[in-house]
Image (cartoon, rainbow, N blue to C red; front, side, top):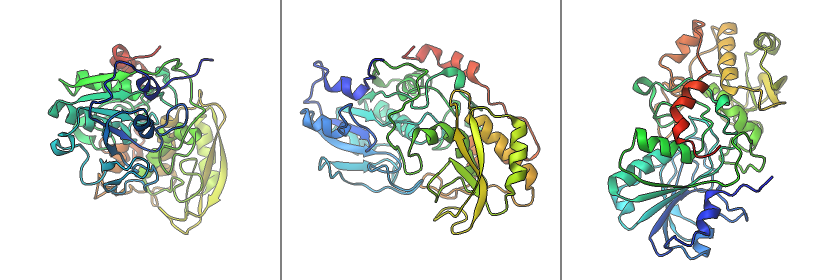
Length: 382
């Protein structure tokens, strides 16, 4: 199998690039070259005229707590200024870009609509279009795979559910690279942008990444990334999603869950590719801090057979049915959503999501053919 070559590696070797252009980069500490050198450091070492850095949620370190304000700072690796795009602003300002010719974007994603790096990219795209700057996406594989048959909805209701965890109508599991989505958005949403994609070489769409570097505090391994499009939905209800434990999103629980009942109901749904084992844990922080939570731990047995969004919706539907008096929607306060309101709607992309689940309404997750027909002409890889 040939080595996958990401956009940053190709860009560094491109003789056509004018290194004297004034560059900024949107990046974090999860973005490396194949030699395990931080992308921004590699650019400086190769003589690129890098002026400043923009960082997304979780900061340059990728260790900032979920949803927490990230301030501007100085990069200890390059001594360059870091402008946070998850602090006082979500989009670069005209002032931020006045001394920049080209913005580079190099951030590993996890293939899920409500993961914010994707939407930071769209705000950067809008700023580049507005202030006439070139944007170069240094593309990377979708770590959970690019098999469009594995894409899962629902598609986001833009009119009622648009937010920083989902601005536009794409599936929850989108099975695309950020370069592909940028290409799609440049035709559908952001006209007039000078956009270039430095493509990945030797990437097989069906391949799940083994060499995974943590992209945020709660997503530390590829198994977590694979379950996240479904288990992330649990943030919208008053069940702990594993935060505050050593297995975020790989286990969930609440003090009032009776595990045997839940396990029995989930077995009826016959989800493939995963084993569910009873667990109990005490979150060190987050929901139910210092309380014993009872629930289930997920062990993936076959990622190609597991459909995380369908699982997450079934899980919440069963919890609502089993615990009608205990279960409720949960406000989830973040820098981008200070009140925390409507979080489940924003995650799922559906208006009144909790009410739909409470009344046993069927939620369509199989949107693969719809999405394929929509994204197909913008795909960059076979």
